[in-house]
Amino acid sequence: MSSLPQKLMAEFVGTFTLIFIGAGAICADQFMKSGSPGAAGMGLLAIAAAHGLAIAIMVSAVGHISGGHLNPAVTIGVWVTKKIGTVEALLYWVAQLAGATAAAYLLTVVVPEDAWHAVSLGTPTLAAGFTRTSGMILEAVLTFLLVWVVFATAVDERGAFGKIAGFAIGLTVMMDILVGGPFTGGAMNPARAFGPALAAKFWTTHGVYWVGPLLGGALAGAVYDALYLKKPAA
Image (tube, rainbow, N blue to C red; front, side, top):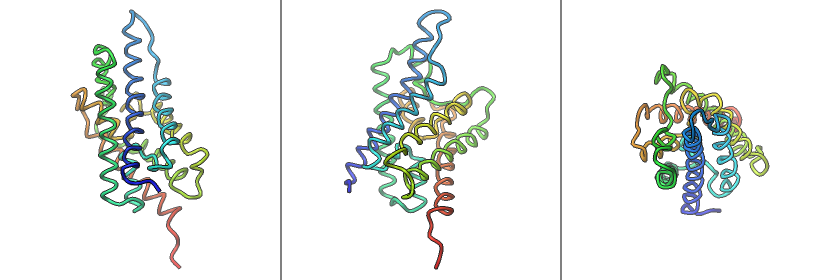
């Protein structure tokens, strides 16, 4: 049984990895595009894969320690189903936001400023003409799918955490970004938005990335728990 400090460190490192690799991939894509006129970047598929791989690897690495949330929206889904206490959930949030912030600030040190500044350090934002309401709905739906998979493969004792949970969760992140990336950035994670926004000082439409994911995560946890985890009354 892991201690609380061990769990918080696992959440810090896991979330750090997601932001450093995910936001870093967006910066790398911009760096490649700016290398010469007409140069091609890595593209959406590669950026989605970077996020998905980071999640798949770190959930597999730290899942047995902390549950591998790496996302306040996952934590709130677990919290609403009373599988984690309020204080512990809040501390998970602190660790996740701290990991995201540390990764974002480190990126500003190691990545050329022209590259990260041009994309606001990979901070998610809404596409032109995409409303805040549409953004919150899309982020909520994408996060619902993500947290549903987390519950089905990791939280549910009948799931397959030891075998495919990290892989399935990572693929879900990749799948969601392929759809949501062009419209909202496909964050599905308040920490994914918060760290880069703080380091880049770019807060445009930031509330979308708290309201949408937290609603989607809480709903997914509550629905999965009600349908599949709650034991019927005698």
